[in-house]
Image (cartoon, rainbow, N blue to C red; front, side, top):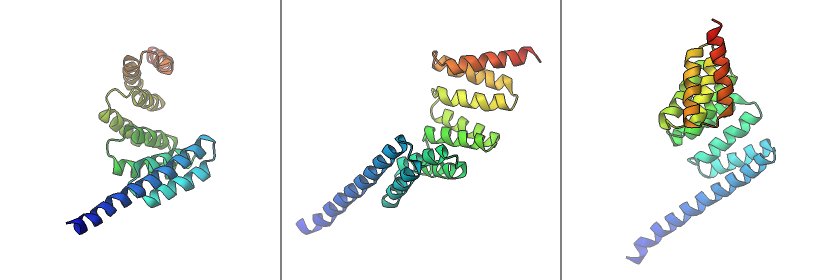
Length: 174
């Protein structure tokens, strides 16, 4: 009986150690990103992923670092990988949408913001961001609805109030 438990215990211990080293590398990468050392951070996040290919936070954080460097295609790939590990990862959808908007893929951005909202109907930031895309497209009715929702969810959301007023002005001047 003792012999049969030993391999199971060793497997559990090695999985724990494996996970801990990925978490350590991810934490080190996060600290580098906070200092603005995005290339170094990306290398550390990549190491964490090499240790644990299912470490969703490392994909997400590497995506943020790529985005800071305006490498939007790479950040979108990383957010997509994070989502493949955790399909309801609202922040990855939100960030991926922002980077799609940077690449002028407004339809893709709206779709991703909508998915972020689907997974968290109280996500004021996603409503605000989607409203910004609608406003860029000249769809002031949908933009206004999203800004109203963002304000209803977060009454101190000053940027949403400002953009809501811009929408109202655009609609009055039609």
